[in-house]
Image (tube, rainbow, N blue to C red; front, side, top):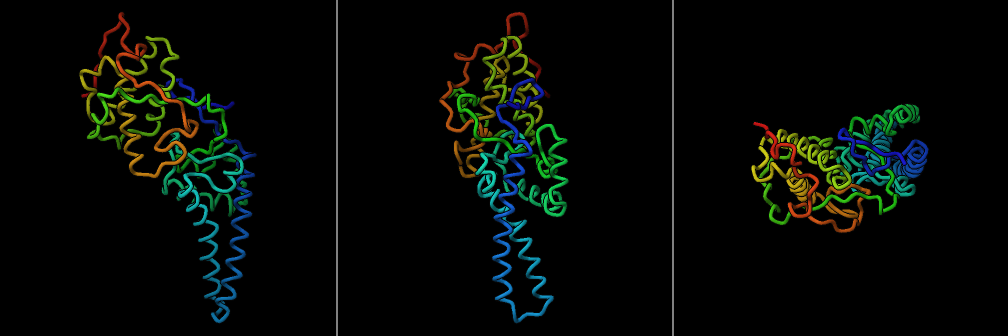
Length: 292
């Protein structure tokens, strides 16, 4: 199994799709798109037979852009990254942090794909996918997306534990817009694996991640949570997922959960009582200097 590893040495559950499965999925999508395009062109020729050649050529170009470029963008947006070909091979397009793609991601992928797939007959896309360690084409690089395999054993999926009940809604006013997707990815993967780490390593990692998140948000970690950075991280991640769940419709597990975490078993909330690993070890200071 090919795994992604974050900068904090935390393994990511998502399995990047390789070139063969992606190429076959694109081939299916292109066959369907071409058939639709031919049907549309035949209909246009019959409907615009009274127009001059320039008008018919303009209509043909518009049909080409609408069906072969606009169609995949619309399908990818509405299906949250699952076209007909990807559905057949169990693939999905997700963001770099594992969340669902939005219109802007699909737009960038479709626009770049017109050049690297349609205009170069897929040569550029194949070369880029072979060179990339995660099998990404140029459209994925510019859009910040990744094509992953959905059909993986459910038991391997990591579950992000919910925050302690008393912290629910505490960070509703926190500005999370400046936190990059890469940092969210590291935080979420840490939370799914923190019980597998040594206590001292776990607390140190949680402290660094909490400091990074606090620096990006411009608000210091609350004093009562400085000795419990994992609890702070769980509450902030839950707040981010709640905001995204309110902005977008849910799908197969909903919200901003990782694709591999569809219908996961319930996890105990991260609280002072049930999380012992992320606490400060006795030999070290229990606090860490929050950003100014």
